[in-house]
Length: 245
Image 1: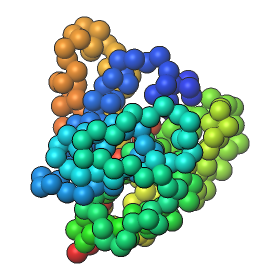
Image 2 (image 1 turned 90 degrees about the vertical axis):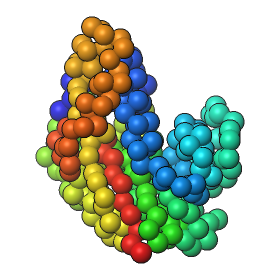
Image 3 (image 1 turned 135 degrees about the vertical axis):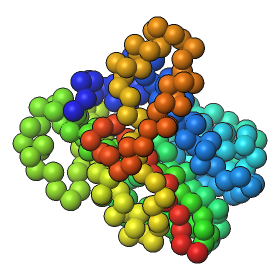
């Protein structure tokens, strides 16, 4: 369980040093994941721009799906080789048309029918194509429930854990086993799976307070850890999966 108020858990609160570290880890994970050769990548992370921009700056062609649910919110203008499409599913793409899919920003947790969404991801991937997926973890779900005093729900976590946020939205939280099952069910082979971060906010805050230039070292330390499939820490799980040839 995380000793952090629910409003902090989506990155919108006041834990500045930790979220700076978190974003640096996420950016480095994406950098290491991106294909070496120029590829066509689908970014279904909600149209917030950061992921597609990083991929485009690395030389890839990016198709960025702008979710209708984000209508009216501020979004950065596309830069580089990025095309934006408004859609609420991937029906506009033909089969086996992209080399990779990035589903950051908790895309498959916000999309409660994750089975349908990941099947669409598998459909549009070319054989050998890969997907980078980030979802809310059970640790996050239990922390939110505890914060709201939903103690009965903590004892009744079934196959699917749907958790209400204080703002009224719903998130689907996954164990590592459930995420692996989701990917396997779509015909995707899991390459690796891990918590996004295992270092605690207090540790990050302490290290950066002593040495503001230690961020790069903290990120290396985080990514050199190997907590594969460990869903007992971290608010998000990240997985890389590959479509069979």
